[in-house]
Length: 239
Ligand code: ATP
Image (cartoon, rainbow, N blue to C red; front, side):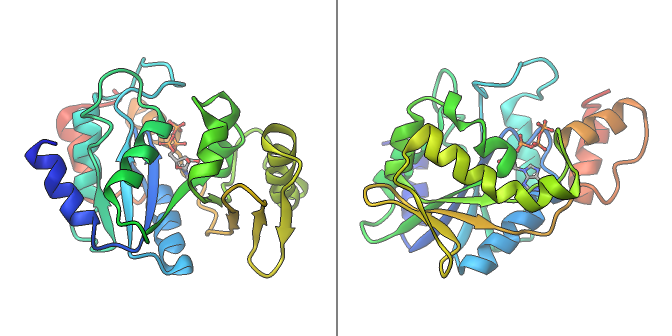
């Protein structure tokens, strides 16, 4: 283990509950941060760990800022936020950044009695059946699925029914043994880890929207932290 890896191990070893929040973060924005903050408070987690993907396996590489600079934007975004930490674990691996490898890594560095959760937006969750070893992920780690506005269908009917989509996905793609527990607001299964649903404040902010605004030379103020906005301007990203 390298020095850096061992110091990260030391850092996380004091946490009993850690929210792992992976993504491309091209760039990180207030939609990510507010939702993660609410998950942290709602579940009483010790920390949220933001994990940028070095090589996102399912996104076209075109228009994606290099991983080091996406990592830097996350560092700037949370530099004054003690509830957050940042992991460069996916930048240290070669090849596509598979979540299963990241989850295995965190399980190996966290203490035995720690409880990591994987935090994910509903849109990404519903596409998990193309992820590498996705069935294994449901055995290894509990998920917290956050509501997300926008997407293909933002009608009120869709918004009301969105949690039904989680159930349909779980039962059709993972196992029909999932049952909803009203008291815990999660889907439980005899052998698998629970899948929690969480109503974070719906902020219709996406990295796509931010990139589009920059390209149109419009302001992105109040969509991402000011330090990130300035960094994007200085580097000339997304133009
Ligand atoms: P893009 O627009 O480029 O696809 P994005 O804004 O969806 O990017 P990602 O980095 O792909 O951002 O997302 C990382 C994770 O954050 C995913 O699980 C996604 O569902 C979630 N997420 C992104 N934006 C929001 C938001 N506004 N509210 C809640 N979750 C979000």
